[in-house]
Image: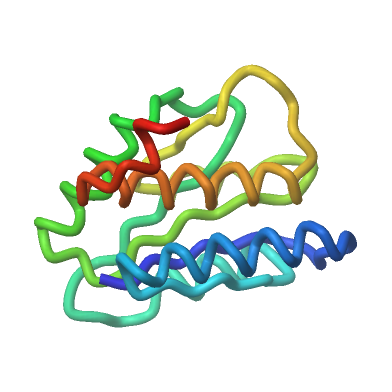
Length: 146
């Protein structure tokens, strides 16, 4: 399985770039991982529509999505890993929200909670939670110690 974390728009803050790189590196210990900066929702839909052995799973992060805890996210990751999903894509959208067409194409829409986060910070939070999810799946003590 390949885990892709996708965001729309350029990264402005060097601290965000550093943290993004750190969590992508940590994730790569557990799953093939790629971070992608793209310019539009259309580019995301093209990425989703690339042919593969299995249909890609697209998870959009949106304030109206389902809220899940770390263990539930870990179960979601484990389920798709065990189902042989080839491409699992998590995407953080544009600041004005997802278009209806993009929302309809999603396999799942998740929320990080009711608080509003800057998109760059939301990316780091998502990456940390994905890393935490994989440590939960493998029994690594990271989750228990935080």
